[in-house]
Image (cartoon, rainbow, N blue to C red; front, side, top):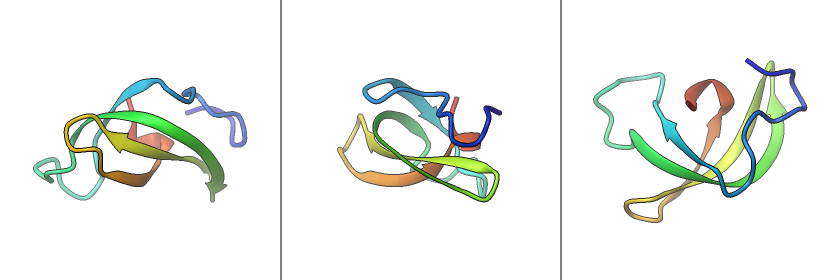
Length: 65
């Protein structure tokens, strides 16, 4: 994991999202980084948009790969 405050991924970059709750969750997939957000606890956050359906969500850096 990267240092909090220094985002590992850049705006516009495509990443894979894997939610922590369930690997079968429908939101798993390819997302584009839309914006850097302030960290929550020890994890940076991002606003991302699904490549498949354009839905946006907030995710933690540890959920991206």
